[in-house]
Amino acid sequence: MSTHRVWKLGADIDTDVLAPGTYMKLSIDGIASHCLEAVRPEFAAAVRPGDVIAAGPNFGIGSSREQAAAALVHLGVRAVIAPNFSGLFFRNAFNLGLLLLTTPEAEKLLEAETVELDLQSLTLTLAAGERLPCEPIPQFLLDMVAAGGLMNQLRKQSGRFP
Image: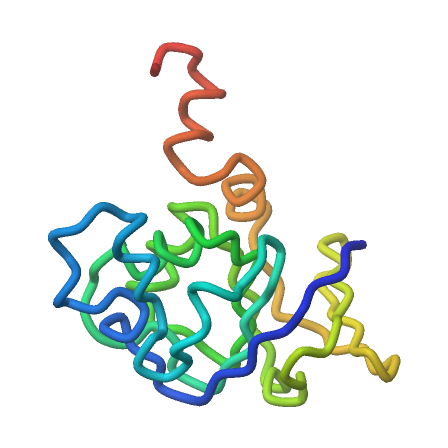
């Protein structure tokens, strides 16, 4: 188990908030420095590796830009916890090694609280001791996250990719 600080967001966080279109010509470092600035201006500068995001429904709605998930990975976000995710964002996130945890009780997580994440049981333990079960994640997706994304997983499996 590992512990993580929570950043609390609302519902309907779209890909343009995660990776603003104005900055899409920049490198991922430049895009990430503007991640969530429309709703949490301090986020990109203050998030620490291992922090998690707890959000409302419809996280990642909007365009299919993979930079939205890439910005969170670049900033070191360990996981996003929400009641549901956009299908395109879900696919991009796992392909890039970002863990998404689905639970209808994501909104119980509080800003700046520390939560424990147990990947064996896919359970979150809140600071007050309450345990929140998350929906099952297929093992191949967990393996992809552990490898740091699909490309890293393919490199490890084949030994032929640089």
